[in-house]
Image 1 (tube, rainbow, N blue to C red):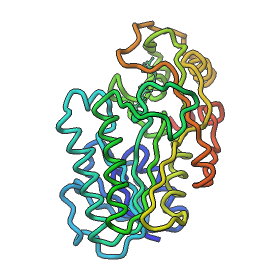
Image 2 (tube, helix red, strand yellow; image 1 turned 90 degrees about the vertical axis):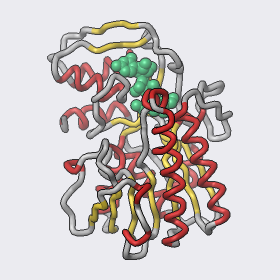
Image 3 (spheres, rainbow, N blue to C red; image 1 turned 90 degrees about the horizontal axis):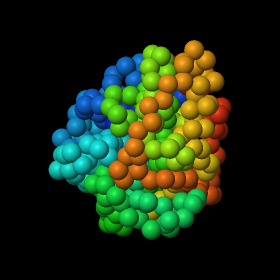
Length: 307
Ligand code: UD2
């Protein structure tokens, strides 16, 4: 099959690209390389790169039939969405509409939309199931929620089947530790590798459902290829179903960095930080046959070896 991956040179997109190529599919990556990087992509005869912003793509950019599109290009930072809400709106919502239009013009039957646990806001019930109230706490969360609604609305109009994946805390190789708001595991491993102190916001008892990027890529691959009726819309959480505290996370990481002298700067909790997060993944398991193969315990040593 032939798939388009927007944001395919980024952290999650590049793992999905690898996953699909290794299953003998053809992949066209659309990436403006603003945060993605060519080094993330393998050299492969079945891989094509369209080095463009999805908003400036035309149907003519794609000359062979497409079986599905995974839309991962986005401004993926909550902080960025507060600092530059209009730019984030453009990248997260206008871009989603551009992808939906492309599905229409190219008669692409499947759209996999990347959403986030940010749509839930502060959880009132754990684990969080997909019917949990959606009360986003940031422009980013709101943009993801409206993006889901756009995809669902147009699935009826355009003979499209849509799968929305609400990602929990994804970690793994190629996640950039380039800002204080990058994923906590990329920041901690980067500091530990360099023998530097880590910053811990709050008491460290907050919990998160950390899911390994290779499992997330597999969820996307399933979402692209699983058989679904046209004009349907399926929304699934992608996590592990288990949560650990940051203090437990630090213990786990320390085992992989035995030379790191535990130096932790305890700082006040971040404004808007949620206390606990844990996905209910029964829907993904039922409809996408999704079973995470990695736990945080098993993934960290393999991940650290790749650093
Ligand atoms: C995640 C997503 C975010 C949004 C949100 C929805 C990531 C990277 N971010 O934010 O996009 O979907 O979930 O709920 O997946 N922390 C430290 N020290 C550090 C960095 C972080 O203590 O140097 C703490 C942070 O205050 C938080 C926890 O670690 O309590 C996780 O932080 P994060 O930025 O990795 O992810 P999160 O859950 O805030």
